[in-house]
Image (cartoon, rainbow, N blue to C red; front, top):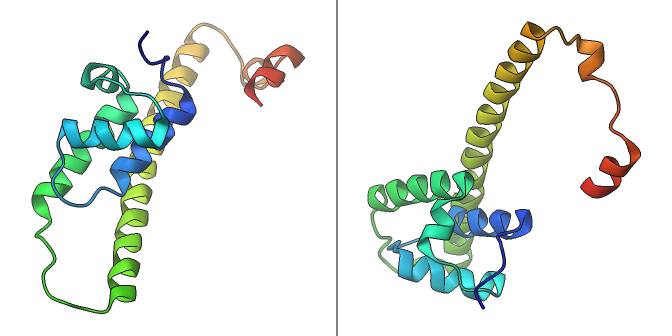
Length: 136
């Protein structure tokens, strides 16, 4: 039996792995690391069906080509700190991209809702109790 459908939590983990990726990036390496991190082996096709993973993969691949390998023997703590800073900067960049995509989607939805006669009050109604419980 194959791996279960990717959950939101698994997708988050998959993009976080890419955010922190340093060095050569290949699908075989990535999928092997992901199998350990998530606990299931997924295919490249399954990953590419997820827009967040696909976009983060493309960005990580571009970044890996731009970064020159770090050479020399420096302070280990400084090297680890620099690596952590790079990981966090990449995560911030990804979150900014995702936020911009969501803002663009919101504008489209608001425009289309207004064209169909929905008011801001209609759109701002609280969710039914059953839906609120599902999202927690």
